[in-house]
Amino acid sequence: MSFAVVVSDIAPLYTKPEPLCELADEALYGMAVEVLAREGMYCRVRTHYRYEGWTPARCLLEDGALAAQWQSVPKLVVQKPYIDVLNEPKVQGGCLQSMPRGAFLCPEGGPDENQWQPVRLADGRLGYTKATYLAQPAPAWESVGEDELRQRLCGAALSYLGAQYRWGGKTPLGIDCSGLVSMAYLLNGVIIYRDAAIKPRFALHEISFEAAKPGDLLFFPGHVAMYLGEGRFVHSTGHTGTEGVILSSLAEEAPDYRVDLKESMTAVASIFGAPQ
Image 1: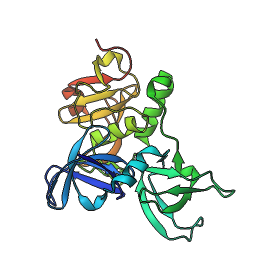
Image 2: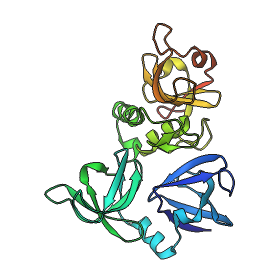
Image 3: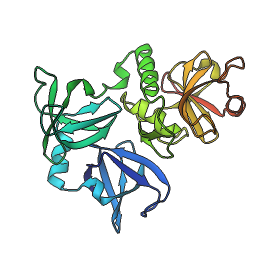
């Protein structure tokens, strides 16, 4: 087993080591992964949030020394839906690398007077992007007040509104239901299971619907959504006619009422409070 760094903007994680098969997940630029196995041009990898899949080897930097160095340096997290890292600190610069929200870059000092932030790519190249496009990684979520963290979780999920539905997707270019909620949590320093299920050894535990507050999760057969309060929720859906990241409601009087989901809810889960 060895470590590698994702150096593609999006590294697809497939269910099998072959092209055009089911997409299980997407790892993002700058994420460190464990390489578990190899088959042809594919590597089976495990992400830091404990999810596994097969990705093309070309998406990875497998230089052991560079990968180790990358893991030890400070990081900034991409906040905009998608950004370009340029070879010069000006808008006319050439694009070295593009990457989505949730990707990682290494800062090289502070921004200049025009807010151009020098950044180091995983392969050592120096580039530039706007400081306002980046943020410090989230602090340990236990150190954030509950009300504030709930607000941050909802804001992160809502930042993907309008993205198309993509099975296995996890970026503003396309995202599925569990990709949406897991990214919202990951951007806030919380690791939950990447698929639409409550699993042991992850942060979520089941609660009653009556106890649900904004930021908690609603589970349905093969589907998950983030609760926003007052019966409303945000989710990424492939439902015909309403595809993508949208707002819906459990209230009968609402124009975006989803009776099918209200009647099929299987569980509600939260990271807050002690498991019952």
